Amino acid sequence: MFSDRFKKTPLALIFSIVVIDLLGFGIIIPILPQYAARGFAADDITIGFLVASYSFMQLLFTPVWGRLSDKFGRKPVLLMGLFLTMSGYIMFSFADTLVLLFASRLLSGVGGANISAAQAYIADVTSLENRAKGMGVLGAAFGLGFVFGPVMGGYFSQFGYEAPGYAAASLSFIALIMTALFLPEPRVHLNANAQATGSFKMEQLWHTLKKKQTGMLLLFFFLSTFAYANIYATFPIISNSEWGYSDAAVGLFFAFIGLVGALTQGVIIRYLTDRFSERTLLFAGGVFVMVGLTLIPFYVSTVVLLLVLTVLSLGTGTMAPTAMSMISKSADPEDQGGILGINQSLGALGRVLGPIWGGFTFQVFGHSWPFFTGGAVMLIVIILVRNTLWD
View 1 (cartoon, one colour):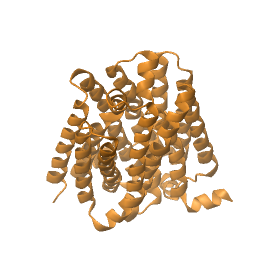
View 2 (tube, rainbow, N blue to C red):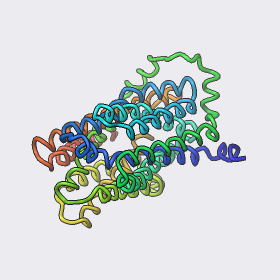
View 3 (cartoon, rainbow, N blue to C red):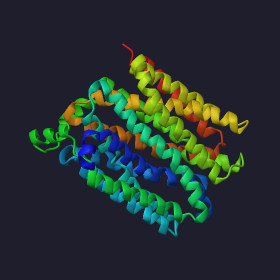
View 4 (tube, helix red, strand yellow):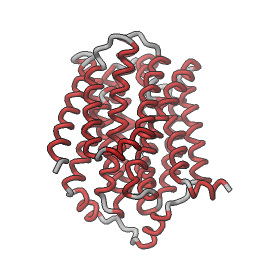
C-alpha cells in the first residue's frame, strides 16, 4: 500500500529520505570544530582540514557514484551510500584519537557522495520546465537538515560528543530502511538501462563538458561553493571565541541559516522561476551571497547578525537550485548522473579548499579574512556570470 503510494509521489519520498539523512550531517557540522579543539587540542588549521576531510571524499567518489547510478540504477547507489554514512557516524561516536575522528569523517564522506544519485533521480522524474523546482526540493531537504540537525547536535552534545554521533547514525539507518522498502527505481532510468550497453562512454561525457555554458556553470558552482565554505570551520569558532555564544547557540544560528535556505529553495524559488530567467536568479543570488559573507565580521548584535545571515541564506537558496537546473539542462540525457556527479565533485572540491583556506586565513591573518576572501571570490563569480552567460 505504502509502496504504491510512494511510486506516485517519488519526489516526496526522495525529499523525506534526504531530509532524514542530512539531519545527521547537520547534527555533526556545528559541534565538530569545538569538539576537535576541546577534545583533541586541534588548532584552527587542523580543524579546517578536519571539516574538509568529509568533502575530500565526496570529491573523489561523487563522480563514481553518479556514473554507477547511470549503469546500475539510482536506488542501489543510494542504499550503499546510506550504509557507509551510518557506519561513519558510528565510528565518530567511538573515536578516541584525532586519527579516528578524521577516519570517521572520511568514511561518512564516501557515503555522502551519493547525493549525485539523488540529483539524477530528480532529473529522471521531472520535466525540463520543472527541473529547477525539482532541484529546489533537494535544496529544501538540505535546508531542513540544517534547521533541525544543528539544534539536535547542540542538545545531544550536553550528554557527551559521542551522543550526536549515535543520533546521526540512527537517522541514516531510518533513511536506509525507507529507501530499501519504498523508493522505486525511476521508470525513465529503467528504460534507459534497457537500451544501454552498460559501458562507460567517456567521449560522450567529454563532449558535454566541452559545451561553453556547461563548463562555465561548473566553474561558477565550484567558486561559489569555495567562497561559502570558508565559514564552515570558522563561523562556529568566531561565534564562540569572539562573540561569546555557546555551542547550542551556534547550532541555532546554523538552524536559522537552514530554515531560510529551505524556505527559499522549497517555496520562494517556485515563484521566482515563474517571474525571472534562471540567469537573472543566478546573478542575484551571487550578489546576495557576496554581501552576506562580507558583512558577517562586522558584528554588532544578534539581531543584525541574523539579518546578515538572512541575506546570505536567500542568496545560496536562490543560487544553488538554479545552477543545478541549468547544468542538468545543458547535459545529454544519458549523462545526467555523470555530469551531476562531476558538478557535485567540484562542489566537494570547493568544500575541501574552502575550510582549509578559511582555517589558514583565520589563524594567520585574522578572524575577518575568511569572510572577506569569500566575498571577493563571489565578486569574481558575479562578473563571470554577467559577462559569459548573457547573450
